Image 1 (cartoon, rainbow, N blue to C red):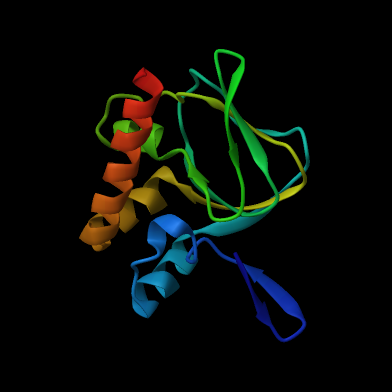
Image 2 (tube, rainbow, N blue to C red; image 1 turned 45 degrees about the vertical axis):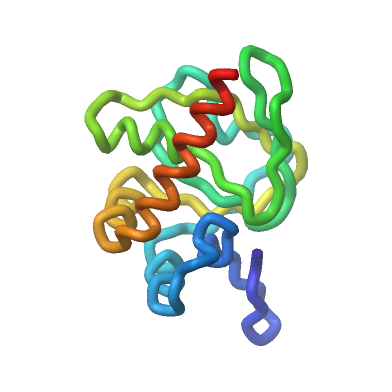
Length: 144
């Protein structure tokens, strides 16, 4: 999910599937609160059991999700990770990563810190609801 601006590509999380219902104003705010980073293939975005420090949306490229060493999903452009641990961290329960997410290819990822993620939840209740639903779905799927 990248936008062209002149000859420059702008990497943004605002067009991710989880934010599909957002208004233009909300999308601009999401862009302000997120930082695009380039990640090389093989880099661990999250490590199962570690404390979560960021929420991310894959903008370009792909990543593999593993639980207990077994691949459970593949993430691509528009997919997100990290919301479960950050929701727990914001709730002061030291949210732990449920899975290891590793860059399968070189990636562009748009990330938010715990504080930036918390700001989104406070400023955009409808986005907070969508994020909490996604987290419940992930936890429910992981339990089966």
